[in-house]
Length: 185
Image (cartoon, rainbow, N blue to C red; front, side):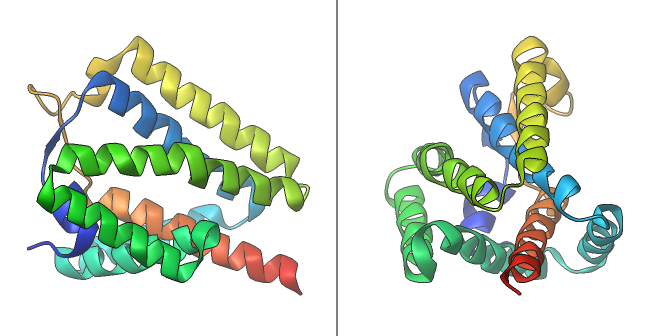
């Protein structure tokens, strides 16, 4: 059972083309800045993965939805983030999941990633920016050069957003909130 935008849109397998896969790899790498920002990366991510492995999928979907809204609130306020999620669900239901995913990819590329890097720049976290950029470039290059590796578990180019990916995103949001508190004092 799935719930919310992420459950409906991402948890069940989605046919994905090479361009979307490259964008997902590029976007996915931005969380690598966490490794530089906080020294206890392994412990926190390990805790999040352990938590994700023992909670039911519906609980992980709800937590992921909350984390997603909180995460995008850094870019467009809480109300803007809720409106974005509602618009994406509406697009998925009224048009197609692919259109909603494309809209999410556009948002991530045009608003979220620039905002993420601007926040790092404002805090003079140049090492975190550089590390994330290298990981993003490496992940994208890997997809460009060898897309079959990313489709290894699927003959048909299907991708789904599992509890593990949701846990990674939740960990990234937790890191950002800790980082904000660390530098706001």
